[in-house]
Image (tube, rainbow, N blue to C red; front, side, top):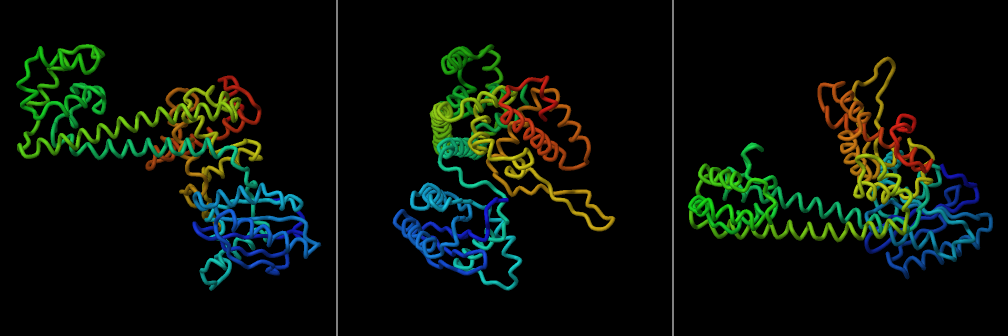
Amino acid sequence: MLKINYMSTLFVGIDVASKSNVVCAMDFYKNQLIKTSVTNNQPGAYDLICQIVSVMQKHTDLNTVVVALESTSIYSVHISNYLSSCEELMPYHPYVFCLNPKMTANYRKSFIGMNKTDTLDAFIIADFARAGRIETDPWRGPQFLALQRLTRHRLHLVEAQTREKTYMVSNMFLKFSELSILPKEEQPFCNNYGTTASSVLTEFLSMEDIINTSPEELITFLCEKSKNRIADPSKTAGLLQKAARDSYRLDRCLYDPINISLASSFNCIDAFKQEIKTIDKAILKTIAGLNPNAYTILTSVDGIGPVFAAGILAEIGDITAFHSQDALAKYAGLTWTKSQSGEFEADESRMTKAGNRYLRYYLGEAANSLKNQVPEYRDFYYKKYNEVPKHKHKRALALTSRKLVRLIFGLLTKEKLYSTDRADALS
């Protein structure tokens, strides 16, 4: 909870939208001193600051400004930065808080029968701050925003690449039905989205073309496209022709449309790969000038590579913003509700998921990687996996992620590299 003198504080609630910001400011006694709407741009923000300064000068008993607004995608970034760094507000020790919308939504329920308008939304946010319900840390400025934009964009590209691969499976099945259903040991390619598979699927118009090609020509083709990286080209050629013979045949009218669609999908996947490589270079460059020590600490953990380390740091920011590992877990949404009344206690407890979904994603992926490389985490995962009859993997992975939070918090606060000797103490 924020440690200020609430009696001498102006509480400013802002309902943020893309074009305008509705503002309500009140003192501790609920006297509404500002009730206005300003445009969501720099002139509008400056107009709001002038109104706040005017109120502070008129009411000399007020000496602190607390600004609260909901974290509304990117629309709250500019106004938060502007208010937290504006020189005109510095004499009044401004605190700017970006709140989880679920918190204010639940607080609204205490006002029975209240209408839903932008003005009342701003009032609710201001009253939420006045009631001392804010438990998060103030806006930390744009220092980690650059890294965050890069890591989130990388995740966006990876998800887009995955969607494209999933989409093209249907076209792949239409052209080469056996390729997508063969067991691993009978697959001609280790990766159906690689360069060699792409060449086979787009340069051979039909299954008959593959079947009628002589083994020698097919082997030469595979060696050329794979740049001699196939260990046994003759075996691959045999598996490929067998799969072609067993596949369904398409009508001739579908040859060109399917080929064009597959070629387009492969081009998109290649483009995503190149863009991801570019983003990776930018992430490394950004993190080198931001917090290289924390990055080195996280990458010292087996299973946490550059991608996961950068993603976790981009969402956490400075670890000093969290007073405990419980606070960090709550920020990530890795907490569970408890339902108990009298002698009854529910067997199942639901994860809140009310925190930072990006941080929760990276912690989950890192925990999944960690369990495959660190015996302690592997044993913990399977212990939790075998405790329940359903939701086995999701529950075990979530609990392993919670265990990882303790490790990350301990390493970053103590500024120590990971070692198996200290792992038990930290996690």
